[in-house]
Amino acid sequence: MQELSHPGIPDIYALDILGKRCDGGVDLKIVVSQPLDGSEHSQRVLLAKIENYLNYRNSDEFRMEFGDLAPDQVCIIVSFTHAPDPVIIELLTRCDRWVAEHNATIRDEFNRNNH
Figure (cartoon, rainbow, N blue to C red):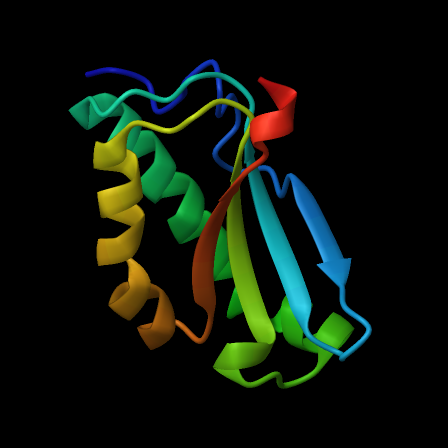
């Protein structure tokens, strides 16, 4: 069995970036720092990372720090430093409902100026 890691997502258990917004909401950012292909392994690693973010979002620790936020006040942002494979973008689109069921929203971002 392959370990759940990828050069672009080296630690599925770490919170990469967490920030409280001016409007009181919270952004939880996953930074994908290397190209992410559409392979089954890459998809499993990304899904595991998202699941850990959702677990944190619904934890007592999160509630103690940020209070009881509505789902639309918590956003998981998957930030790509390299253009993501279309399969990965489709995967994130399919995650919308799952993430909403766990009290958050999800979106992706890619800064084309970096590469």
